[in-house]
Length: 272
Image (cartoon, rainbow, N blue to C red; front, side, top):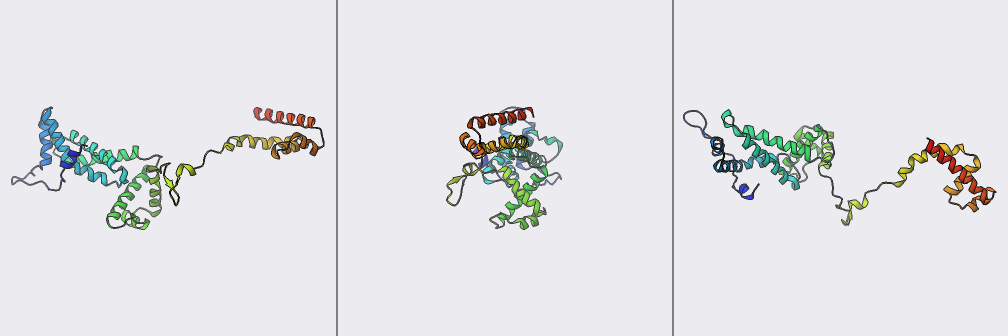
């Protein structure tokens, strides 16, 4: 929304005046909408549309603030509310006899809820918990305005919202699904270690777990001498000469027994 439009916007606080004949007079803002509805397509209608959107911008901002979004995303939420306002101005039909705000507020609110549901959760969070999260964030904003710099504790939030304290804790944890930490976030007392540096990686040994489990059932099927040779050679990392000296056979015989044992294990694994 252009900066000039924001600066021109005025709060809608004055109630509509009442004529002596009975029906309430239209506010200047509502008059813009009625004039726009009766104007043919063209520059004049376009100008009236811009003025109507500008006049109701404070409504969009107030509705956006109700959701208590993080500071760095409040402007995005305000832009969504402005989009809802534009849709409300374009879709409003004054001939139905309803006040504009009774149509605009649900329209803007629907856009905000749709945006929060579809674009701000990085992992799936149940709708029930999303609603509680929104109420908790609104309560935190109220508590901050009342002097609680930290947004209040769980008991304060429970008293304000009526939500069970366990659900409040889950709702606060769910906030991480909307605002995950950056991989470049600096941690530690001196803020010199990034989150990416302390996160674990995939253990390559995990790829061998299935084979190791299968081998644990096949190795007992080998003769005792071959099992010992396998243990000395692979587990203790001895050479074939060292294994031969311990077992009491030639190195050539150790080589043949290793080859035969490995062939049996390989065939059994592939066959399984």
